[in-house]
Length: 302
View 1 (cartoon, one colour):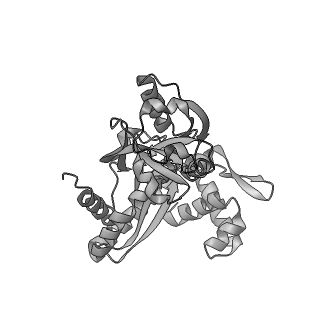
View 2: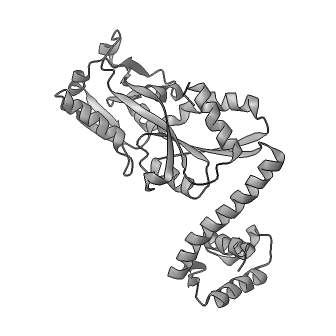
View 3: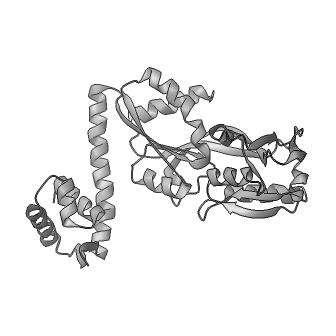
């Protein structure tokens, strides 16, 4: 079995159908079916079961898929490394960002483009769980995330570079006239208003951080909604459902005149941010230099 066959197998596994896989591979269906049969004969196992009109991986197929993804990724990394040695910094820089960190991207990308104009970009947005999966599959080079990074990966397999912390602010509807002249917000006041928090099934730290701060100050928060989306949270606040505590940087991506940002008087409530990438794996030059650019932008000691 060679790398070409592994590519065939992974394409079939992703598509779940020989016909679609053959089309993506720019080959006819019969030769691809023969390659699959040859692999199964060589390995002495059945890799797929028929599932309606498609194919479903067997247990052996699932095991091979996991190993093949790792092998194929290492193979491509080696080719990429050789190209970079010869050609310099170019290619596609793949960046992941959790929803609340997307506003951190423009400044370092702007600075990076001035130095490395031959690099293009692919940017994925999602929660920690999804971006952790993409990082593990080598689909992205690095992730901008709130810390801790709540992915399923073992933290021992990650490098985490902290960025300057982000203070929480209170987001309120501009239609609520009691906030019209308010210039700061006491944490103890939260109990007086319906509260929205950010929380998903996989990412709970920001929600728990807020609850812990409330308990520390003897506040019983009146939580009326837990949202998985910053955009939905802002929209609900704009419609007068309640208020929320969010990291200040989040608001630079949402210029809705129907909401107002009020500083929180307790500066101890901060959101930690960082860049995350895989440890003990080849980091492409384009990603290495981007990390150095981020250090310059945020004045991080080298």
